[in-house]
Length: 329
Length: 256
Image 1 (tube, each protein chain N blue to C red):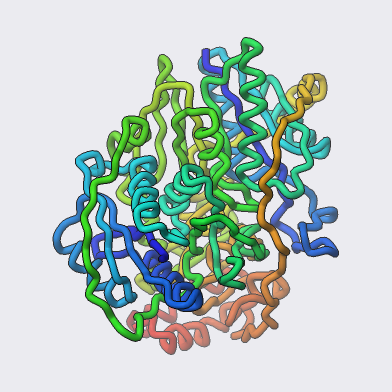
Image 2 (image 1 turned 45 degrees about the vertical axis):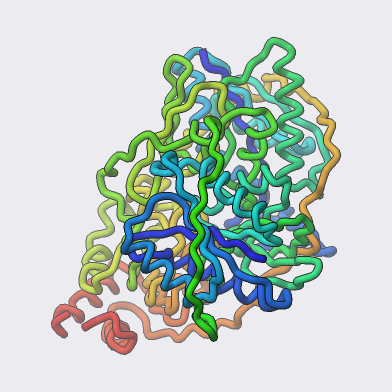
């Protein structure tokens, strides 16, 4: 049995949780048809629960376990971990998985510690099912580690965009079981006591954007972003920047794309004045089409891109903006 | 007075080209050099700020061999005031082993009248990216833990920590002692000064050994993802290429 912790947003199961379910289902099939269970945690609006159940059915989930407890109204990694560990033990799961998000990684680290299990983070592929051997991203995805996960249960997080979510051949109508995890005081000491509105934080816009205009050192200064912001507006997109840009204080950290920033998967990424070091590539490699604008034709960003324009972004981007405006965009 | 212990890791630079060792078991960083993980740099900065504002001590610790003294000296140069090197052959260490080694060192030092009110680690290492050392360490010591934290303030034995959540900035409050995994973005690491570097050379580093029976990291091999031959289509040079770019944006359906 494989158990998947499912995170939710306003539309039901998150995109990365659906990817994780697809990954889990394909692993379950290779293990000779293990059943696939999903876990929801905490109170959810009816509409979100219904949407999630439909999505979980499309992913071939047979049983949905839903942890409910009055203490689950605010997030605490310890409480979520107790919900996961309880569900894992009650069904004797062989493998327990979550998406490799901030929360998924945090919760699974607690789960693995409590269950004395081995955890493989940011898995992208299963090399062998017995003994379980996976490939996972290390060095920000620039290197893959082939790792044996000998413990039962095995704890895995799946790297974002490692697979596309695909519906099962036979959709299911999952059976829902509600349970109350045995939370203790130590589970809730690390709970969120309040959420503060962040002044401006477009992280969600960045990770969900269809078009991202990227900017690196080539922007030149904190004043070098006007044309880039205009381009992103003309394309109904979002600005994303490399680590050097935030380190120099030119733009806020929440705009950072990379190993220590957001991981994006837009339809089009226009990387302007970005050399394409591993730190950055880790965050943008899942873009479907990459257009690089750079003065250096040999920059890694250019050689890894699908399309490139060689030259100064401060000359090229205004020309693109003008052409877009001329055509009425 | 808050005594802070900040645990760091020496990792290969990721700015250059990555090569693997001949046996495919490790990264050959001889030519690119080593550095600190970005998250660790922020943890060091946070440790210094807290120690200074409370007249406490900021102790830097790492698990490894003499090579890691380079990273320890760098942390001392920016303001850590004491240092511990837990000597171990970490070649096959997994996150549980690193956490066990740190916990062992913390326990043995805390019996010698030192207490670490707050232990900071980087959220995840730039090389192995396991996301586990902070959590495993906290459980080993029986202390509460937070991960993904940008800023930490200490007031009267209480920690107020903030991190980025799905709906805004999440605020946590814990009593000390506690373990916190710091993420880049909350504080800006400072640069070392010349006097700082001089002082770092003179600060003694406590060498300790940890008794750990490693469970290992499960590593069978490392491999580089298959290198894709460059398929880049150069649309042109300079502003004259704007027309071709806009044609492409229409073709891709993102301009209307």
